[in-house]
Amino acid sequence: SKSAPTSPAGLPPAGEAFCFFPRRKTVRILVIGSGGREHALVWKIRQSPLCTDLIVTPGNGGTQLDGVRSADVKPDDILGLLKLAREEKVDLVVPGPELPLVLGITDAMNVAGIPCFGPDRYCAQLEGSKYFAKDLMKKAGVPTAECAVFNDAESAHSFVAHRGAPLVIKADGLAAGKGVVVARTTEEALQAVDAIMKDHVFGDAGRQVVIEECLEGEEVSLLCLCDGLSAVPLPSAQDHKAAYDGDKGPNTGGMGAYSPAPILPDSELEKMTDLVIRPVIKHLAGENHPFVGVLYAGLMMTKDGPKVLEYNVRFGDPECQPLLMRLDGDLVKIMLACTRGNLDPSLVTFTPKSALGVVVAAEGYPGSYDRGMPITGLKEAESEDGVKVFHSGTKFRDGQVLSDGGRVLCVTALGDGLKDAQDRAYRAVNRITMPKSFHRTDIGMKGIRHLEGK
Image (cartoon, rainbow, N blue to C red; front, side, top):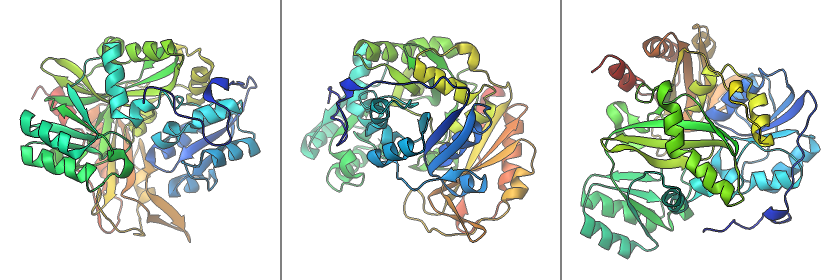
């Protein structure tokens, strides 16, 4: 859809929104979500002297252990979140995951006069619809892979048979980071189309598929803070999507990340932002939908130059964890400046140290997995200098931390260089015990090899 979605029931149309921005010295903040990204956001927000009160909904075992007050409103309950923000007299709402943004949480909060660090639902289609994103990239002149879009499996089959592999098959809608299949053979591509469109493995997200040329190269992530008109780049990061070492196995939501990524050095950040972020910000502002929040470009560094694989409209998970470990600036001050449209780049400062996070997952992820496994050794892991264990899928019950998701922990470390951060993170991982768990042992190796010239 090229038009803004309709407002959630009971709210005025998006065009009638207004914002009241708090100017008092302290603020009450609501963080939405339950993953490792949200634990990292909570951890960093608490460090700001501006934050007087913090609520997370629904949160996880880690936020509970950190003593953060929680609520029990789900991220897709827009009216429930609005009610909670009003009752708690919240001054700033910080949505972690993409779903509430795509459903219009920012529009709802703006109507109520509550600043929200995130784009409106029109802009959120950049992540909510692969077709919308590809169409906008074409209009804005952003380099990306060639693609075709299909509403029925038969037409997609004909295209695959004519074009041949390799191809990338994507569910058009939200699929929690798992709706992408890199098909190396024509048979794999046909099976992916059927799984998405006929078997509905990604639900409604697969009503439409985008089929792209398969780009070759190394992936890197560029995240930018946006205030509607301007964009300030964060240091580069590299995610590891495949489940197993050597980039083998199925795609996941992310098995680890590190920052900075040597393939995109700090000296190239402004140039890359000019190429893949600022044209999108300018285009959306021209459509009267200024983009506020984090715009994340997943890039493939090809022999023909960088090309955008996808956009996300929020912090990545697990990229958020190492990035916030490196952030020296006041995150609350930064977020408020973005919502007010006056982000000063001088607010966005980072330590020169490297950060690396390793995800500990439940056996079977990204497929089916058990829950309720006891987790021990967390304090021992955090006794390692520079380490913070961010909880992704955990709960705290009867004095014990239990697994409650596929990705369970993100063990993140700061170090003097990438190899030092890697060593610290893995030493901490080895101090944690959880039955039926696994993790990749090669997070950061691409960057280390790059630095060594291999």
